[in-house]
Length: 349
Image (cartoon, rainbow, N blue to C red; front, side, top):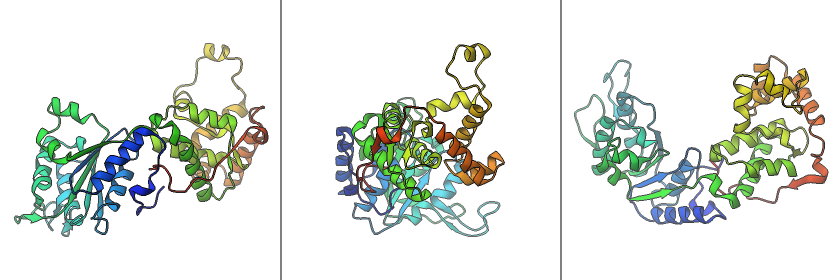
């Protein structure tokens, strides 16, 4: 996780698609134009928006983030524009909205394409003229705000099918920046893995020095549909499951491996056809521990509570798993030691 005050200069990349993205972001930082950031979930759109703000002339003013997804129009009104005391049931005091809080700074509206048509109409005036009204008030307020928006949805197709207002799109897309998915950034993957391992090892107090060859191959072969968010979850879980100083492939739990374990068990015929499957009680227990750790984002304390065992018992069972791992994954002969990677290199969400 990067420090909130980082700038675009601290986001480094070795991939051409990402270089183009950062070059356009640097252009945006030198202007006051509204910016629309496109990209799949987990690619680091919020990270880029924050870095853009801290690299701009508004860096000393507030950066206010707002997620527009899954909010009713009333709640969205209250969140964005604020409300007066008594404006609705439960409104016990006057509350400032995101536009007011972001005055002279940047307002980041994430998942803007999730807004309803009514909400889009209301935000259009605020984006275009800086004008808004608090719920329950009659006076028109003004805020000097630079708007940066983002969505993972196909917003241009939404415009063609009237799911998103064309006039609002033109107002929020003074510059449009597309963040490439992690699968299109192979050169960055090693540095990002190194950064996450170092961060997870520090957070968990573990002397992790790297991956063995098979673990590295497993990570590099994965397509990362969840992008940086998935990478962070996988690495933090792997560090939690590692008892030594090198991560083995058994500690790497990828999303593609989870549905079969989390859904219904394989049929008897499927089991019979897989001679290499571990059908022992110990194997089932190990798979269950791996799944619970993944669900708890690698937190052993929460995993032990969910499993109904003590923390020391969980540590002992993880140590047993490490000792009985796949032969041929020797960390001493196949180790991939991490190179020195700056803590804030790459884009980590």
